[in-house]
Image (cartoon, rainbow, N blue to C red; front, side):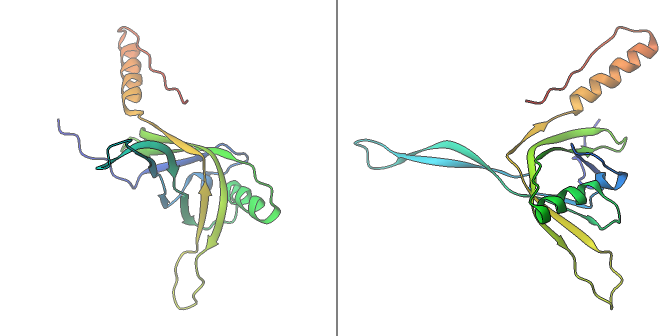
Length: 175
């Protein structure tokens, strides 16, 4: 069997804030899962032909979430409360890429996200476009969680239990 690369149009965004409504999980666009490694340079003592470049700190880009504007949203309320009332409450997030069975194949655990920008698309009476709200979040770091192996093991364990076979277990840890 040939495994095709994953498509990026089926995903889920979950915030660790309450209250949430179903619209809080739906986004049309997520960008910013990027990490750059800073390189520190050290000159070689007595050797002038080169310098050593050693890995330093990681830099994470801002996360940008876009979706059609809805009348009720806990995430939008959290974002606006931060920006308008200066009431910043960092939250963790989980962004999951889903397969055709709606199961996560890979996920990214985002730590301590706070909103730093909120924007609304333009209003234009000549075009009937959906109003898009955009939230830019700054976060400390993310961890990549490869869930496909754990999901496969869990599905196998359920199949074994239903078929009367031996049991299996799978665990996922963050940290």
